[in-house]
Length: 364
Image (cartoon, rainbow, N blue to C red):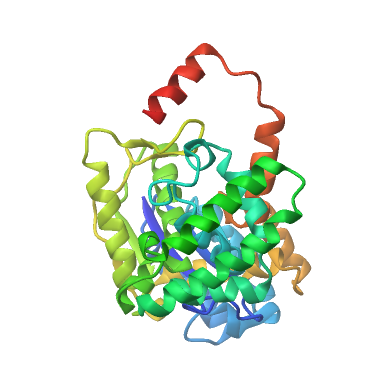
C-alpha cells in the first residue's frame, strides 16, 4: 500500500494560538502508486483550474467545487481511503502535565492503580478542571524550558495553585490523591524530570510527534485491514519535524522487531499492536511534485473546515460525507477521553477472579 501524509494547523511549540486551536494529520492510502497512476488525472484537474499545483488553501470553496466530482471519481478508481487525527493543543498541555507529574513511576505519592489503570482518566479529567488557560500555558512553558532551575520554580508554583484548588472536589479520596501528589512534587521538584534538556527534545515532546503516533497506528490498521504491506510512506517535507518523525518511526520499528509486538501498559488500558509496523524508511517529498500529497492536502482542508463548522460548499460537504463512511478518525482531547471512558465505566461489571489476578500481576 501507498500512504501520503500531510498536516494542518501547525503552530510548533505555541499551543495557545487562538487561530489554530487544533493540529490535524491527514493520511491518504491506496493500493496504487498515485504518483504514477493518477498523475494524468491530476494534470487534468490542474488544467481545468489553470493552476500549477492543487493547493486547497489557495483554491478555496470556489476552486474545489469545480473539481470535486472529478476528485470523487479518482477516489473510486484508485480505491483511496482518507484517515484523520485531530489534537486539541490546549488539552495537550494539560495532558502532558498530568503524564509527567502523576506518573507513578516517578511520583511515589500517586497510588499505583490511579495511574496504571483506567482510574487515570477520571483523575486526569479532575486535574483538568483545575486548569485555566493561564495555568495551562504556564505548565507548557515550564515543560519546554531547557533551564531546569527555572522549570522547577515554575513547577512548584503550578502545584501550589493546584493544591489550593483541589479542595473544591466533594470526593475526599480524590482530594487526598491530588493533594498528596502535589505536596510530594513541591518538596521534590527535581525528581520529576519535568522539562526537556535541548531544543531537539522540545520537538520530541511536541503535539506534532504525539499526533504522528496516531498516524503510525492508522497505517498499521490499514495494512492489517487490507492484509497488505507498506510499499511507500510519503510525508510532506517540513524541516522542523521530519527528523523527529523519523526518530519516532525508527523507535516503533525497533519495538516491532522484539518478541512481543502487542504492548499492554496496564490492565484494561489500550494496547498497542505493532505487528504490522512497516519496516521501510519514510520518504519525504514536496507537495508541489507529488500527486498523493496534493490530494491529501485537499481532503484535509475539507475535513478541517467540516469539523470546525466553517463555511463549506454543499458539494464539498457531500464529498466529505461519502468518503467519511470508511474513515478512521482519532482525536486527542479531554472531550474524547471523557466520552470514551465515561461509557467504559458505565458498562463496567464486577471484576472476575481472573481480572483480579491480572491486576495483582501488574502491581507486582
